[in-house]
Length: 297
Length: 314
View (cartoon, helix red, strand yellow):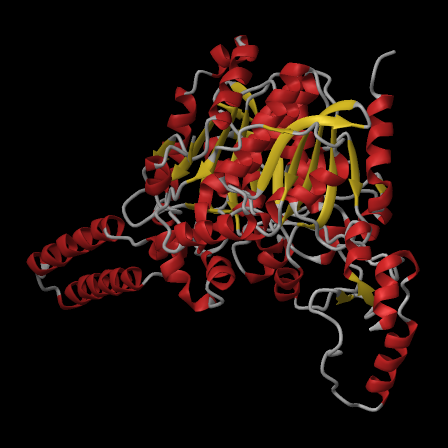
């Protein structure tokens, strides 16, 4: 208890050597130990990537990146906006757009209602504008908690409107992708959003507008095969899953195991499909520098 | 083959047998034959009336179903196939080239399935790789330069989902085509002739008009894949096919396609000539010259066509 109190004062120095060694021993002894009883729920987290125990508050301060292994956890849309936009400058546009059930698909309405309640969002994307280190930009942020960030009519429409807003105001646009692909429940309406959003990118291009896409974990399917891959500059977060077909679909179809690291951001960089991998602590600075380089003096 | 088709074939064989028998025995069975033939005609007509979405899915995938090259051969004259994406290779699952539609030069592009297993292996079952989409785009840009209309035939289970496709940027290739096709300064007509599968179909079907053959389908994903994703049970494909709204009739009703081309009784494969004639006549009605004369207007209309797609509440 004494140690933990100390820890609260100086979270910066918290590297819980003692706990990890205990854990290592437990593993060696093949004993299944219950979670350490003295620690209140939610105070500590165990990194799913490296297994290191990390202090929750540190983890949040570090923008949900493991201090030990650098693993970038998924961020929700509001957290992302807080990370990127100058405090108090973000203004949301088109928050009122709501999905309907165009095919009358059973269970879809319920699923939407659940997602709305869980995420406190109306859809799988938040769009708006604001300042990044003083530079104006339109941004669109997808949220994978909302039906896997899938793109239905509303996501497609909000992206299209965000582009149109950027084009008409002469602003750059930055999109943070996080999506499993097209939304199955809306059938061909979803598929056609790929064409619609790509058309919006084309219009923005013709007007000479800048579009930066930032691919975060996961970016797959119909989103990869449309606006995500059409940025003037394409950034990605470290180790983000990025691909066209899901790994399982690919393995089933070609009946062979796909290698580890396949479809990771690093794989795409190596094959020439993204410009740069940027870690989260550097993301805002990188974006603001890029924005500045696109301003006429 | 569909169950009903088997019955039809059986009946057809019976009539043939009866004819031969009549000839051998020099007997007159013409009354009986007439009755059977009437029944055959009726059965043929019924096969097209009562098809369920699953029947249509089966029909659209049948190996007997005419492929892009079959139609290219019948609809156009003097087709010269052109190969390669100038970047990586030539994808046999997409064919393309230049041909004449009566007196007008056009660029024709089509997804090509095999007509048997061996051919299907060569054609990758009609599943394009990135180089296929890039070849298609190269030919479209060429068409734009020489002001040729572009006609696309859609027939694919989907884009190849394998490791090679990922390495060479399947997502990027499809995305690029979508963006470029919206802005292609020449008329584009897309015709779904069989299976319109997902992003792979979309990648060569952004057009001024999208037509579908009467029994073809166009879907966000194969009904098998859909059922396994949403219900973790790929055997519920039939139910999925019904709920996904994939038939030409459903999609016309939803305003997502522009026209349905009627198939001959029993389906396109029963009479390729008739089907090709229907396609040719429809293409002849398109005012390509007028469209080419106002290309800004053409692009505005195409943009508006895609801009308005979506169902939502405000």
